[in-house]
Image 1 (cartoon, rainbow, N blue to C red):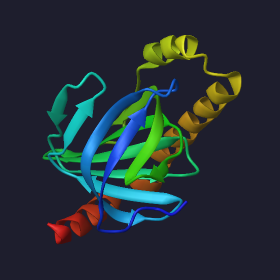
Image 2 (image 1 turned 135 degrees about the horizontal axis):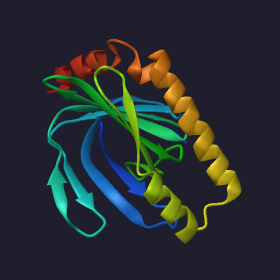
Image 3 (image 1 turned 180 degrees about the vertical axis):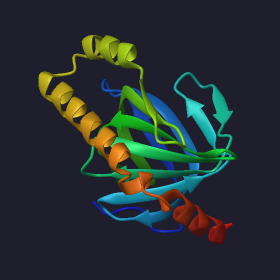
Length: 175
C-alpha cells in the first residue's frame, strides 16, 4: 500500500466497527505521506456526519496517522495554545484518495499544559457490547491507549515541543 502524495488533498473517512461510515473530513492537505505515516493539515474544513449534517472546523489542525498504532492525533492551533484530540482507532489504510480508519469511541483531550482527560468511556462500553468487539480488539485498544498516554507524558511524537508548529509552518507554504 502506497501512501498519499505530499502536497495532494485527500479526505479522511472514519468508520465504526460495524463498517458504517461515521464522519468525513474534506480537503486535508498531505504534508507527509508514506505507507506507514501520514501527516495532514486542514483549516476551516467541512466535516460531514453520518446523518448528513455538516459543520466546519474552527482552527488549523495538524493530524498524525500511523499504520502501526491504534490511535491518531489531531493538534489544533488555538490562540491560547495547542490542544490535542486523540482518537483511539485502527491503524489507517489509504485507498481511493481517502485515508480510512475505524473509530473506537475512546478519546483523549490534551490541553496546552499537557494535562489530559479520557473521554467517552461510556460510549466505548456501549458500542463494545452492541458491535461485539472481541477480547483481542479490546486488549489492543486498551494497550494502545496506554501507549498514547505514555507519549503524552513523555512529550513524544506530535506532543513534542515544536512538532505541530513545524508542520503548521510547512502547511503555510502551500497556502
